Image (cartoon, rainbow, N blue to C red; front, side, top):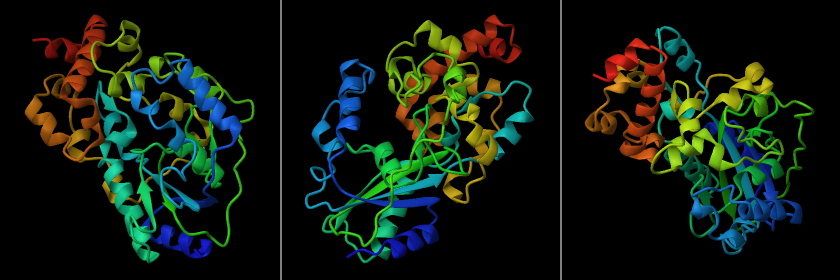
Length: 325
């Protein structure tokens, strides 16, 4: 039998910001119904992988044979270095915060494997680690394992820490001696994140319409950007942090990560607007090696940058006008 105290102690030693544990079981009918309604309304946009394997997403025991326990973890990726560096530029362009460091999939997966090894568990035989690459409802399990609650901006908010975290899970075949309680929402009547979304993507109930979300549109969507999305991007050409930055929990509690791999790459912080507008495919490949930005591919990033350049040029931005030459 697994020991909760040992799991959490080892998780903290490895560098996880939070760790919680729950029995592996089917999601409650309320959450399953929410998933089905969300998909039926088409809110997943072109992310067809969210439609596939819904049965496994709603029950981790179908994902890992013999599953008895889910361990949910969170890792802080926030860095104030981003704000300090960009504040020194006259007209900075920016990425979503998590994109300045190493690809979180690789970092957190390695940490989860280290946790399994420290517990004397073998991947495949005793369970599997997951980081946003399999049909598992990460946000539900983070809340069920007591890490935090799902805010109106859809992200998990950790008490007295905020939501600048990436999640990961271990689905294990052993039972645990102690499980954590579900974490109830503490958002109250606050709707600052909903009001901050430039596209109106947040629906106020902890879900969003991806068809309107700048993170989806600038990263996942292929082809041309809708005109209103190009205008809503402002100076952020990959992802969007506005809902998270508006959250009082982040404004009060966000603190720098101690995970070296999540610290921003200095080469990215040093690029001026004119450098971004003149970015070549070769520079892209060097700058974003082992980066989550690869998800958008070169074509997507170039599309986003051109949309930002056109908007800023129309506003008389000199760097944007130089990039046009």
